[in-house]
Image: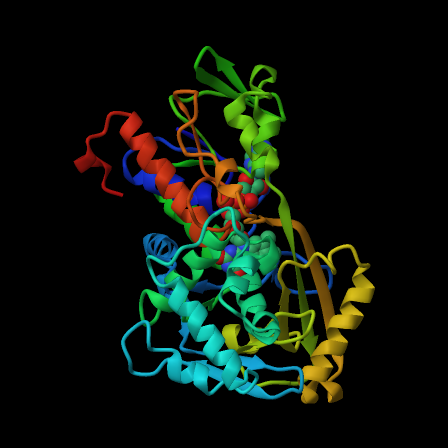
Length: 445
Ligand SMILES: Cc1cc2nc3c(=O)[nH]c(=O)nc-3n(C[C@H](O)[C@H](O)[C@H](O)COP(=O)(O)OP(=O)(O)OC[C@H]3O[C@@H](n4cnc5c(N)ncnc54)[C@H](O)[C@@H]3O)c2cc1C
């Protein structure tokens, strides 16, 4: 069994297949596992830094199961309160009341200071429309869906825009209503704690790369690093081998591609390049994220994290709170999702603007000295969940009988998230187990 790609999709599939007794070889282009959810070395800093803060919700059940499998489930902290800092600097907190879902957040919403009573009633009306059974076509934009439910400009800008950009990495105008409704149902409506924010207590390499490597090595999987797959060799309706950049050819009974769709296009042999099945994702569009890290000479907030309204920064995270005090100063991580307006800006300009915003939002930061700063720009962070994009996502099973697909962009019904990546990996592992002739009872993964 060959798995190409050591991101969360490839890792979750590889771990499950190794548990089923498959002899797994995992090919990873980089020198590290984890893919997009990783930490990077930065000159001048003693420890690797997360490429971007990654968070999850309690509703991310497949990801939490994967964390349990590789032994890091207890390394996620769930916070039952989310702070919002509005344009004037006023802080409101959202927390659940002791009421059953979907009423649990109603008293918390009623207390939010940045929305008027009219705004809150409009949001309540939209949530009623999002209850299971509420219509939301995959062809309709979420902005249009909101318009049909009488949302005010303020509810869109102060509530829906940050919620949707954080969850789906796109603006409501560019998000399919069906994806937005999935997120609203899973996060806010289906269960009392679904909305609680999960924050890793360790850097991402220690959440993903190191534990998954140990798990796979203990199950005798072969891990090939700095191994770039360059071509799938295909004869008839089957893959017969995979070529690596150094000329090596690897062979197996089954092949799982767990690479992003542009990388899959490059792996296909010429006769499959225009194939109607494999060509479908060509219509997908990427969406960017900008992440910055600042280290300051003193603490500037006691909050663990906050949503910022009316700013280019959508969230800040207090990494000193998450990881404990470390050399290098008080560590703030900032995230801007759907960062179309920022991603092409020069790094120094961006750092200047983002630091100015932080000084506006957190008055203590005005007295702090900036010790280090780094910004990461990811142009193709996720696929944009545009109206109609469902038809472009591919299933795990391909027209080649021994080639399978995983990746956050495949047809999971979920947006491009760690949860979506793990769901795709588990889905591919089950499809491979079934194709290999394992009975449903033996396929328990
Ligand atoms: C900046 C940023 C912030 C994010 N924030 C969040 C968040 O807060 N919460 C959340 O849930 N999700 C978040 N995401 C999304 C999440 O990181 C991804 O959805 C998920 O990690 C994708 O996993 P994957 O395995 O599908 O793909 P990838 O992580 O892209 O993995 C693919 C792997 O394949 C390897 N590869 C590619 N080509 C080849 C080749 N030819 N040969 C061998 N190997 C190859 C790559 O090196 C990579 O390791 C964020 C993403 C980014 C970029």
